[in-house]
Picture 1 (cartoon, one colour):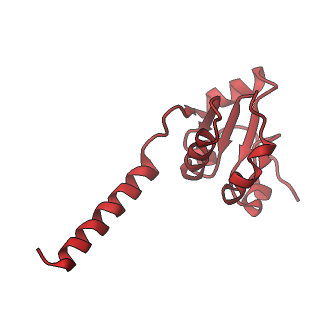
Picture 2: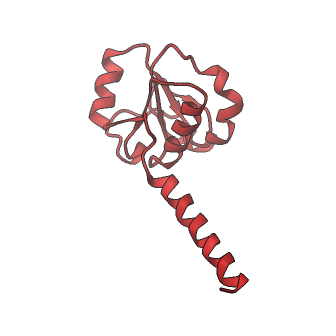
Length: 130
């Protein structure tokens, strides 16, 4: 086997692993449907909603009472998130919230969930920030 073939194989394996990591579920991260989240919001006033989208996306429409901590800022702003409450993270389609779940699990958070399908599947009220 020549060196080019070895390098190509290694690159291919790394790409496959990267893609799998993006799409596989995060262990310990609960997935809530839109209906489940609406019920939880009604019942649990201590629920912390975190929108991990960019500020411009957040201002165009977000779930009421959600705080905006964009995914690239999450690691440095993790101290703003209470550890004694249930955390619900969401984004547009679930990809960034899954990454946020990995980050929070790595930081020791245990009571976290994400909105399955993100805001694309959300069927509840939204508010805009001007």
